[in-house]
Structures are given as C-alpha cells and as structure tokens.
Amino acid sequence: MKTFTFKLKKFPLDHAIKQMKIAVKTNKPYVHTGVMYCDSFDSMMRTMTASRFEAFLAIAEKKPASISALAKLLNKDTSNVLRDVRVLADLKIIELIEVPNGERISFKPVALYDTIVFECESKAEKKASNQ
Amino acid sequence: MKASLIYDFEYTVNLPDNRKLTVSMDLYRIDAIEAPLDYPEGYKFSWIAFNPDNNLERVLVDCHKGKGPHFHIDEEGQGISFEWTSLDDAMELFAKKVKDRFDVDIMPSLFGDEE
Image 1: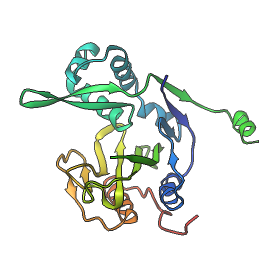
Image 2: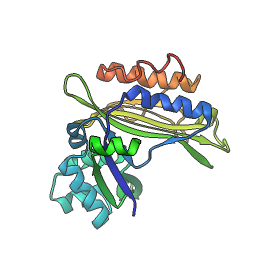
Image 3: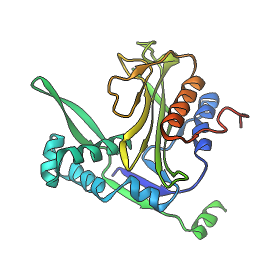
Image 4: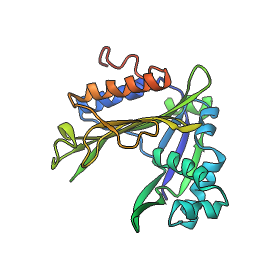
C-alpha cells in the first residue's frame, strides 16, 4: 500500500532547498517522495482541503476516465474540480494522463497513492526518537 | 532513458501576511542524454511554487522533452524559454520569479557559504 503523508514539521525552507546543491555535489540523494512537510496545522489544512481530499478518494476508488467524469461523481462544477485536481497533480498525489479525445486531449486523473496520512509528532515522541 | 532521482521535496509554509506558499521541487540525473538541449547537463527538473488557496497563482520552472528549460507564470501555458548556464543559475532564476510573484525570498542563504 502506498501512503502519502502530510507531516507537521517546521524548519527553514531555504535549508531544505539548499540540500539540492549538496545532493548534486556529494552525489547523496535527498529524496522525500510521498511526504509533504507543513510548518503548521493551518498550512496542512489549507493545502489538503476537504474538497481535495474528496477528489482524491473518488479518483482512487472510482477511477474516473476524465475530469468531467470526476466532477459528475462529486456532483460539482467541472472548473472547481479541475482546480482541485491540478493541486493534487502539483503535489504529486495524482497524475494526469493525456487521453486523445477526437481533436481534443482530455486528462484522466490517476491516483499515485492508496492512502493519505496526516502525521503530527508530539514533542515527547520527537525527543525520544532523537535519543 | 534512465533517470535517477537525486532530489525530491515538498513543503507548505506560512508567509508573514498569513498567505501560504507550497513549494515542490525535484531533480533527476539522466544517464543517457538523448536530447542535451532538453535536459541540460543531464538534468531533468520540475520546480513549482504556488498559492494553495489559489493555485492559479504559480511559478513553474521545468524542462521536458521537446521543450528544454523554461518557466511559466500563473496561467501562461506555452512557457518562456531561458538560456541554461548552470544549475545554480536556474535555481536563482526560480527564486527570483518566486520573489517577483509572491514577494517572498525562498532562498536567502542559498548562495552563501556551503555547508
């Protein structure tokens, strides 16, 4: 089972980005695939909103053939669903596969994970795991 | 084409005025370079910063087959190509575009002392 985790952890953004330069220089990968770090609960909830969570579940469970099919499943306006789907794709939780549709191209949303987890470590747990 | 993932990271941060910014960056090293102009120095990358409350506000710097390194601001679909000089310069360009779009410096210490 593949799990995507929203993890509450606060650290300087530039420190994390700097790891790219270090990874290139040292040839030691810095790879946190399947994890979205968030510096607060508010950041977490505003990144993975209820409507995006519903869209993810519908994609994972119902496997709709297109974004308009997903909108029908959710009984929502296609343009609103499209915005949520684009965020999920930007977060690499789903991917959008191009499907030729006559002279147009439509996109099939495909879930890259089975489960989404929201993780928050207490200070006591953090201290114990660091020891 | 064999690609090795060497960097992958995603983070959502609070900005001083209570806006949020989500940054997602990856970097692959391509072993067999079939298209050196599309993947400069053998790098394949996608770096995006967007407002999670309104993902039409976005900066995307990436490269892919048939396109080479380029950037998109907001809904600009075609992308604007840029001349590749180095990975550092591409990262600096990303930081500058994010600064221009969101008025936030995401890499204040990036080009300072190495760790």
